[in-house]
Length: 289
Image 1 (spheres, rainbow, N blue to C red):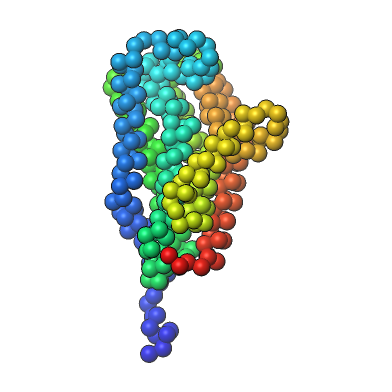
Image 2: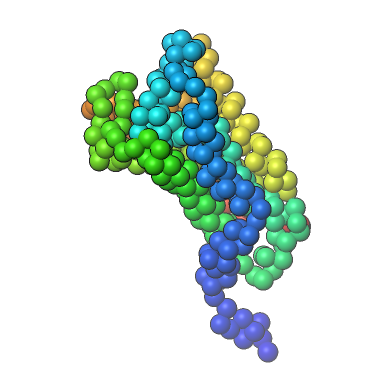
């Protein structure tokens, strides 16, 4: 029998189904812990407000700036509580979670020695990478929605359903406030694409999942530090973290869209470039593990 006859019926598009990868990742302990912490964090924040005393924002004076103002409004309704949960998570926790989902994709397979067996099934390299990218993106988005949904649920139960407070504009009615909160979620999801790109590229370049996750987080922190150095001038505008706080413009009336657009475009360009490099490298990589 010829090779062509032996390969009859083989369809690359039917190898490594997405749902099989979804179930596989769902059984992983790191997935369960990451998603579990998305539920636990709002509960911890709620307990902190309940037992931490009143007027927390006033104790530190005015040094907290915009963040302190969001904290002052956190107990005035479910929308404001959710906004606070997102504010405290956006700078580091969500970065780590997204880096974990994307950085652990290919590197973990290589460290376990199962990557070469997946390719020998055979699963086309581009499909393997594409499926893992889609599943990692799905879990990252689910984690973000889980955090916001849990915060909105317990915040509304405890503090009621009221307008979305804003220190830079008038209070926003609940219905419109919910839409603006969804807008903030969407913007955070887009900006986190840079972390996803960094972690995914590093996952292709190394066999150590911890190195890929940690490397992406460290590069993000480095960019944040450089963004604070005003001596860099306009160079800071090209840093991937420069527009990460632009979501606050959604709270103003009217919505400040200029920085939002710049931040979204920057994140998409960075992510597309990093993912392209990952595909380019992996499709030409000599896989031995």
